[in-house]
Image (cartoon, rainbow, N blue to C red):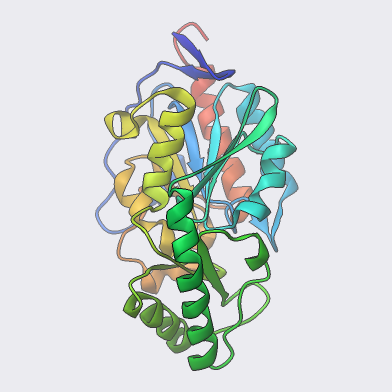
Length: 289
């Protein structure tokens, strides 16, 4: 059965998949599944992108998924300002930015921006964010704010792998400082992100699915795919039975305690394209399709 919400279509289908082998992910090719899930939740950096730009192969995969009525919702640590153009130009129908803090989506022909925290809370946190950022820059040699910091409204980001480099002890020191100040802190493939509040990628995913489709993600988590590439995706890998890592996730093999169920053979956009092909193939085999 076909459901349409906010102009997006969702197929009412079920997914049948065997459990992942303990410890490490299975190759995506081993995914024995029934009809396609309801949609895709995905990280952006180094999952869809290379050097900050969405790869052509990933962009083509996004277009194929849209044509197959499989919505792709991005959940990222990137800032609101960086994310807005991707929603405005239709690359993605929705993005939850800043690790669950800001939702951007198209509605009635315009880009809507909503926040997980109210304005008073954001205003109160702003000074604290500046103070922690100053402490990190003062106490960690070589630490620099991310170049996309001007677009951030609810967090701070320290560049460790995009335009600057920090070694593991320095990254750990940044995380320790953030957490000592009462912040949440996660490490992506390029940044260390810190914020005040209880929002996370998972809470952001719940929020955007409810906001756009009126659905409760936890009640049907086995019907949504999550795709990621780094240590800050582990909460999502743990939550979604249909979790998939693109191959460059293996760069963090020694730091992962939670693995996705499946792993692609291709890295970044090529890996995401593998996911798209698997899901579209499943859609073509749905009853009546």
